[in-house]
Length: 193
Image (cartoon, rainbow, N blue to C red; front, side, top):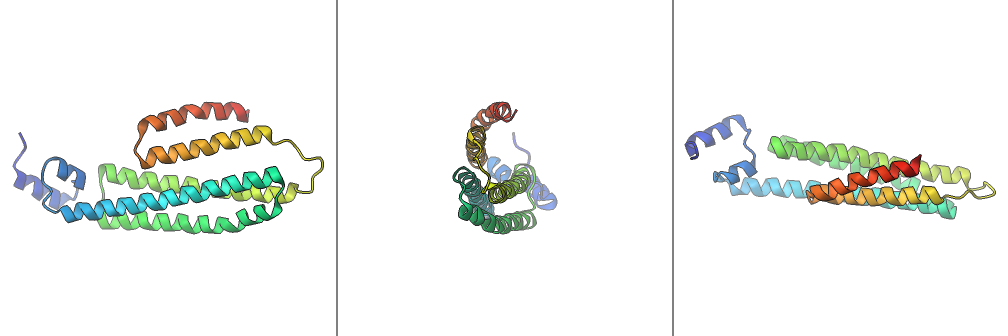
């Protein structure tokens, strides 16, 4: 049996601790437009994070391709595009902070925003890594004979696969895919050593 509905609504109003999902679960959704705004903002955050992940993945792939093909122009382009990744990181952080202020989330929504902020920071580090590889391409471009990058390419491809799978698992809330992705990490560690 549920407690008195009026009492729960009053508690939810006073403390702000009841998320829109919890309100919906127990049938107290007297303000469906608030849930609509909440979901709209969550969708916007996810879209920005997915865009950030795609941009970082492109930068990593381009820096790897520049290294393999000794393409200085591609390396310069990766270096210049890193600024866009930095700007997008700031934008994702801004949207997350607005979400926190607007909705004052608790529980799952708060964990979601915290996770997005952490993932966003790690993605930005991935962009910095791509820039660093591109800078090394410029430094190594005149090196003769050209070294073999086979192991590096194998490890990079594995890492890029893990990046794509981990982002998909987060955005789709797919815990099975997240577990499978974590298992691949050991193979990456073996390649690195």
